[in-house]
Image (cartoon, rainbow, N blue to C red; front, top):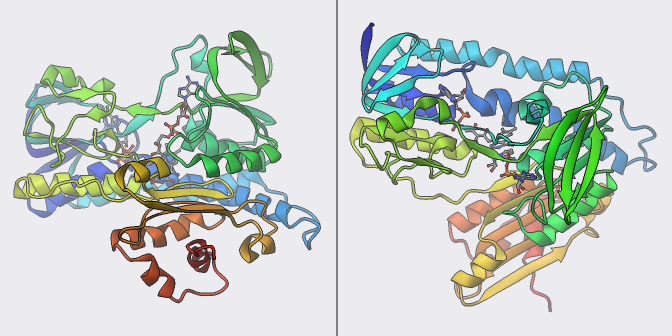
Length: 453
Ligand SMILES: Cc1cc2nc3c(=O)[nH]c(=O)nc-3n(C[C@H](O)[C@H](O)[C@H](O)COP(=O)(O)OP(=O)(O)OC[C@H]3O[C@@H](n4cnc5c(N)ncnc54)[C@H](O)[C@@H]3O)c2cc1C
Ligand SMILES: NC(=O)c1ccc[n+]([C@@H]2O[C@H](COP(=O)([O-])OP(=O)(O)OC[C@H]3O[C@@H](n4cnc5c(N)ncnc54)[C@H](O)[C@@H]3O)[C@@H](O)[C@H]2O)c1
């Protein structure tokens, strides 16, 4: 069998793998990448980017419904086939463009899952590959639900490629993916039910705001069933049936489609990492701050599959850069848990950055909570939006923001302003001195930090 040697062998062509590979190639190392799906990774092909193309049509529907009878006489009709065509114009070019880009940089490309056969060797496409360094950047895959009929479940890949909006749908799991897509389908006229194991959706987010978001989504027609455990799926003639348990009793639900949105797990099963004694657990490939495997110094892991990641695109890119840099220069850069804003793209959007109220109160002696309902403020009223709310946490000793939580139509943008304020340790006094545009959601941030007389 042919044996090929590389300086660096990268597994996974998402943002993390590409970034690491490019950093190594730039310094003249001989690099290869293997991917067992089309090249380009989740964000560009099966995640953030196509999702936001589709989602804007749901937002348009939602905004039009809010302004119905205030000038909008009819909510627009959406031609989903054309929407899908538009979305495909973003995703279709990605694999070829990625392969061309990587090839031009001199990177060899493989199209199969490699398998470790020892700590320095993998098998791929019938070849034995040896490498000085390996980078594992395989991301996450949907959590398998081990229940009867689970083969009938659809994932976010199917949601992004739906040819038509189904009449009805059930989502199992109300995290980011479940909430965003149930909002999208409901806005497009689908009857949506969400089944969740725990007693609330979006566990990391502030309950004051999550409760308000749930109420808006319920008004849109979404049914939430909490503390419910899915048991089995069955195919009917046109529909699919879910049996679930709640409070010790069994119930059933029928819908055209049932989606598994119960979370995502590290994509490591196919790699045979145990054969190479690479430490891995439920959080992924276990790495130190250099993004280096805790079991072998010649193995690095980055992006969603690493044990250090919050699975978000900006962090995957950063970790890919750190892994590549450390391979080329020796371990000189560490991943230092940057402040990461996070957003749920519903309408209104839910965003957070920094500490939750409980975390802030446990870390600092005096936390001032600026919390309120802003639905009577001009920005919400002009859009006839029912909900607009916030919670901002300030360390009284330093007068700096340590956590911010927003529920608003512009939260994806305004949370970045608060991220900068936290990162630069800007005092609340300094923050309120800034002049922002008017009227704008950014300007409202200053009003949120107003002390009650
Ligand atoms: C529906 C959805 C929406 C999302 N929306 C957002 C968002 O709005 N904002 C945000 O910041 N993040 C979002 N994310 C998360 C974001 O997509 C990921 O954090 C990011 O893409 C991770 O990049 P990565 O390079 O670590 O992994 P990936 O992009 O997943 O790349 C991993 C690559 O490895 C390959 N691979 C897997 N197993 C093997 C194997 N055995 N052999 C070879 N190759 C393999 C895969 O095919 C893939 O190409 C979303 C995710 C999903 C699923
Ligand atoms: N806007 C964004 O930035 C964005 C969007 C999508 C995904 N992502 C990333 O992808 C990651 C994965 O998102 P996700 O939504 O797949 O997972 P998640 O972990 O956010 O949510 C999964 C939900 O499913 C529930 N659940 C688990 N098992 C269940 C079961 N058997 N029955 C019913 N409910 C069950 C969990 O309690 C949880 O609420 C996120 O952590 C996020 O980092 C980000």
